[in-house]
Image 1 (tube, rainbow, N blue to C red):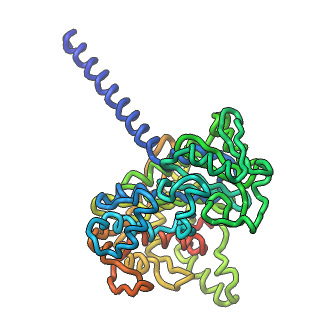
Image 2 (cartoon, rainbow, N blue to C red):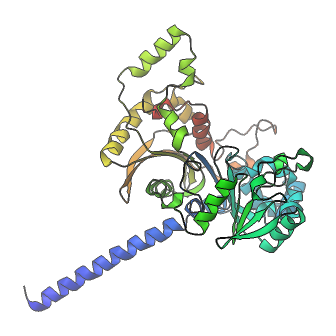
Image 3 (tube, rainbow, N blue to C red):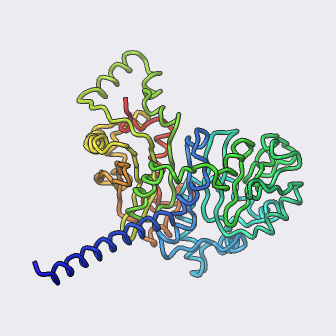
Length: 431
């Protein structure tokens, strides 16, 4: 090999390594730009947070459905409602609304009817919020909002309610009239659900204000944990490899509009026998267990379970992500899960899972193992053809007198999360 050839060859290797490095950095930056991961970066990595987590991204609907437009403010949404579909100018808002209202992960959506009061009560408009994350079990729950806020107006609204500002480790914290340790105190005379931070029970949760983030919780210790994360003194869930891996897997096939995580004690309950089985009469219980255990293979125990609702240009999917430490366990799970889907029968509806999925436009599950920095995610994609804008706009519910038969957006995701809450996900059981 000539000297010039060797130099050329070495130069080529250096260029290739540099391109690989740049590609890895770009992928990392792309992951860190995900709103879900940005919000998890505010969540303390402890047992109180590692429960059930719900994520809703209103703004993502515009990315998943490019012709959709989220209302700029509550006034514009009211104008859209008053128009009653007469003007084509409101079609983008109508499309956004028909997609978003079928989602179930928004805590704020429950009190949307009181949104006209929000600017006076909390200093921001309902549609200033672009993403929300709620997690933890009451009274240790937390609500986190991300969006476009005028913090001067938020501060003014809090001041009018008797809140005072504190600097805690360089983090801006607002405490109610009776202090940050009184967030759990109920006062039904002050009940105002227009305040998403405890207003449904007249509580005054302490809050963190920082740039585009608003974080509130009734629990003082939980608030202090959030302050420690914001101050950079303790790790967040975004630092946890299993959460990063789950977010990377859930966002690789499309735009993520909502997500749900199971961790800690509620995840451990997946190893318990379904309560429907345990409460059944003895003979019925015996028949159910005999049927389940026929050709049974144990699913390796996973350390995190997540669900996602995604869409791309042509497809929509409800996704399931199971996170493992070991590649061998993930590969074994990826072999077992399709067999379980093919044979599982819902204990709630008494229907085969394959029929339930077919009703929702899913023909066959796609199961793959996704590696992410030493974590292995079994990603189950339950994919259907994406419903067209025209069909979504024509869709009305039975309550609205509708007769158009389509699969509304988010249908598979809704089924997955509802089944988890009903403990009807035996095909993911690890017993």
